[in-house]
Length: 247
Image (cartoon, rainbow, N blue to C red; front, top):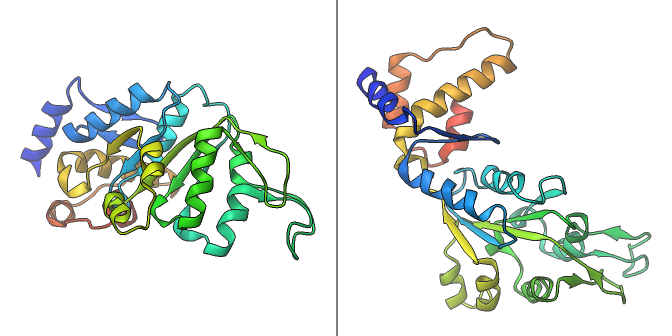
């Protein structure tokens, strides 16, 4: 552990990249991903983030938003797998009063709420196929209709989407539109799993120890050599999120 810490100190000298929100990296692949994010942030290009669950895709998206011209505008995140399929359309597009039986008042959807800013569509592969055409229209025409609405609503939003699935396989299986894929995948960024960026573990451990020491009102938290050894030998299927929970 001491030898690894010494090597990490050598690697981080003059090279450490730390962005807010919490995204810390000295791993070369992660640094490459961050450099792409820095370049693409000032543009309006849609971005597709690829990576396993827990690698920090939402934090990465926040970094892109906060370094864009839209930083002072809304940032809205939605997990497509967390919404029942029959509610996805009304959540995204909203509806007019009387559009259906329970529509007793007008509802503003997430597209409209994010107008001028950034909309993060997590687990984009879970979007129902019949709604993918509507999303494609939003991207192409820069406008949308609320459910039951007759007037187009102009939109100026940046879409950042993410998935831990293979969308090309979904396209072959007829579960995802190829034309939508290319609209979303203007720039793609792969975030490596924690098991492939072990050089970042000491930085992440130190960061989370400091974070939770402050949260718990303790002056200083340390980690034993035995615990640190376990951290290095474990494969972390839940990635950075799991590491944070463990700390």
